[in-house]
Length: 93
Image 1 (tube, rainbow, N blue to C red):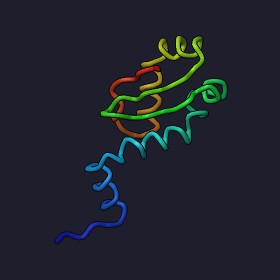
Image 2: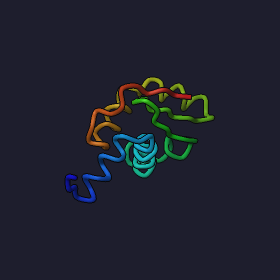
Image 3: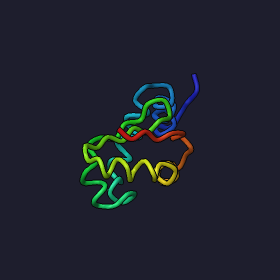
């Protein structure tokens, strides 16, 4: 039986579980205002990650349209914040 530090064990657990996307979505929500600005943050309803896809939900039609134009920028900023290339696609709902 190998020995792991607590951080390594937690990292391995998250890699193997479905909680990884939820944890990353939580991290993104915590810094969403810094990444996208106060106005976008205020009108964003939810953020989810499922199978390397970031789902952003808003009820404001003009904001949906603006976010659709910024998909690539959002993907780059989120991946930079997560320090990984986890997000491959952005879907605006």
